[in-house]
Length: 73
Image (cartoon, rainbow, N blue to C red):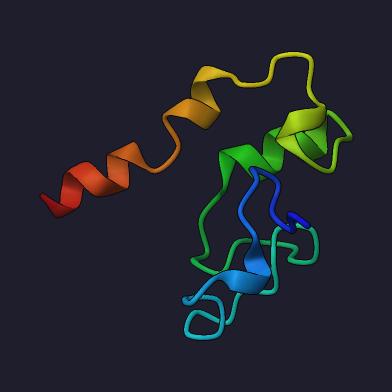
């Protein structure tokens, strides 16, 4: 079962405990203190998961995290 808005199995995430993440559906704000555009998009559309959206798979989802990876290179 997917527990995140975008399809990650939180129960199998190795980082979850390290960063004190309660999962997209439970947390009020992301653990990093910023804004998660994917979480906000789902909530604004009153959806639990991206896959429930008529626009799935959108550019936002396809590019999620790419800017973070590029800053690490």
